[in-house]
Length: 273
Image 1: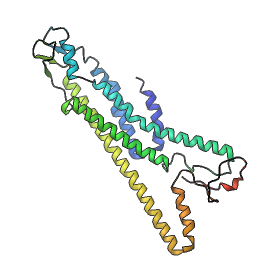
Image 2 (image 1 turned 180 degrees about the vertical axis):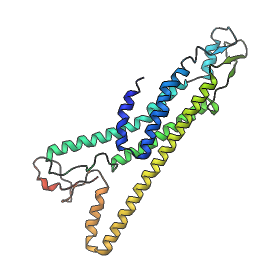
Image 3 (image 1 turned 60 degrees about the vertical axis):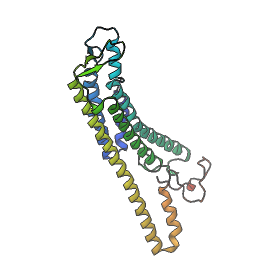
Image 4 (image 1 turned 90 degrees about the horizontal axis):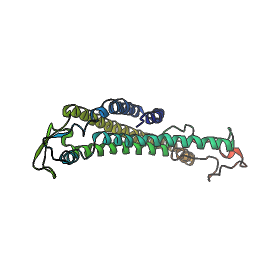
């Protein structure tokens, strides 16, 4: 699997992430992807071959291995890393969509005809919701995989010897796992890093929501102060607050004029996201 593709795609997320998001991305690639590529795949490469049982009964080792290792650690981690990084790609795609829309708008109305987005990468409107949903999804994926790991392997550890009495084994046999101590160390390391990533996602989510609430309260206080000093400006103040509510806001008319080449450019004065 070529993880360099994911690294190249997610490197652009740094431009649109908060400080917590940059820490999360560094943690994922340095302590999860690199550990997975350099060590984990090699440690689990001889999983089935070195699983020995003290019996010569044909098929006994295979059924016992399948009983105690229903899903390989390596494959679960690969699926987990893929799912946990995909939401970040959605943020990049959303920003790319905004940039393409802004470019098309400029081609239609010209450079002096106003802008759809003052900053396509700024987390406002729909992009804010995309970013917040990506945080929730990433935290949920890591939490779900930690639960799955705990269900398959209690306490996230492997025993040195397992006892198996499944047919076609003639009786209860002892089976020995290859390098259980080394595997336990890497398993606990991956579990701890996943837990830290969940914590970072939750902290970033709280930060974004609290910042959004603070901005909303500040806008209400500013509007209330403006109305108290100038009652006649209440209508214009409300229109100003509407600039923060959506992706596209046109000033100068009550209705939103369509962006057509033959419209006068002074109809579209300003757009703020």
